[in-house]
Length: 301
Image (cartoon, rainbow, N blue to C red; front, top):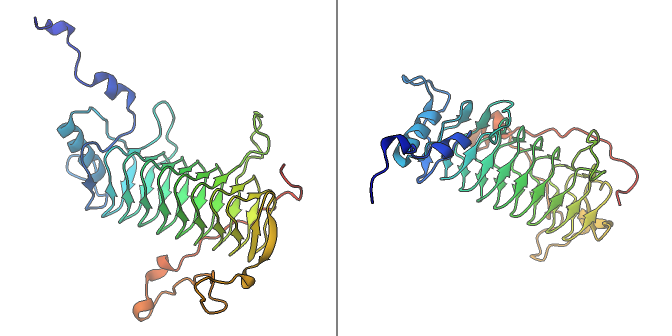
């Protein structure tokens, strides 16, 4: 086959590099062993230097993204997108704490702030301007839309949808397949009243439950599997059904493993800084404050 004239040859990867505004870590895992905010002699930081090296090795043509700060020891799998999609403005930097683990296929938009020791499954999406605390787990195929606030030690299982402007306090567990709604007027162009649910400290949401806009789930309350929650739930209650109704108090819930009375769903106490093995620093003792937002008295049907 005759070689093509030099003037007709296309540069390798030019089309791909033009449409990629973020970056991905391709063909290998990159363990970041130094704070990304440290300036290097080449004018970049550790994140951009690692990415530039990865792009040079794989010849994919990806451009490093500015304003990304990743803490020491955070491991990011291949094919992770950090940064707002092409064509959209990035509002503020991405901040990811130390000792995290972000698995392949995930995407984190601009303006996201993540604490230490985040662990994700594959194909997790975190929308712009979302804030996530320390020691959180977000599992495979879960979507967290923009503008959400998650506290510390939040666990979200696989295939969940967390709607925009949702607030989740510390020590909340969300089972697989849960869906949060945030728009009381679907299809309308007016979004001024859009807001997701508020989940207070220590609450548990069962598998495949649906929570409608504005509802608040009180501290240590439990929403049964498959429930549709149309109005707020007070603290320490068990609700289930469609629509969800109060079944009992948490104090009446018996553990099948016969734990001591009062041990079931005991709220974890924050550790206090100072003194022996209990000393975990002020950061470990931090409790995320959830704003008190009144929910409408009527049901959303």
